[in-house]
Each structure stands twice: as structure tokens, then as C-alpha cells.
Length: 64
Image 1 (cartoon, helix red, strand yellow):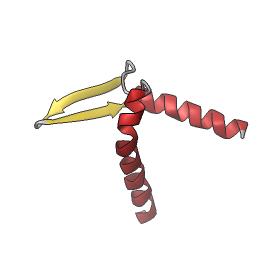
Image 2 (cartoon, one colour):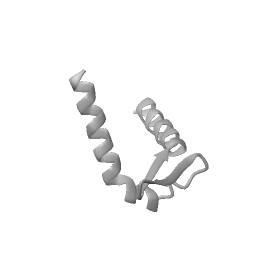
Image 3 (cartoon, one colour):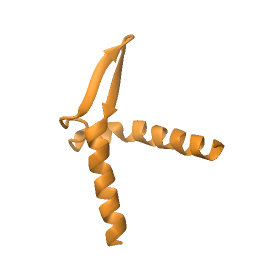
């Protein structure tokens, strides 16, 4: 259980670090990516971008 919590935490840190780079590439502006302000902070739910990245990674794994 602790191992999965660390993996999820590491993934969130890496995604938050890479978010500006991914936005410059066009990810994060797909229909299905949600942005909203709550409590003075901007929240971001990249549903469609996550699906696209997952598809790309799975295709790369199958090829290699």
C-alpha cells in the first residue's frame, strides 16, 4: 500500500513539473480537459490529455 502511495505521489510531482511543457505542446487544451477556479486557486483535470498520453505510451510499449 505504501509503495502505491509513493508511486502516485511521484507521478503527481512529475506531471505538475511537466505541465508547462505539455501545455506548450498543445496538451491541456483538448475538449475534455477541465479547468476551474476554486478557493482562489486554479484546478486542472486533464481527462482527455491523460487518455491521449496513455494511448501513445501503450503504442510505444507495443512497438518496442
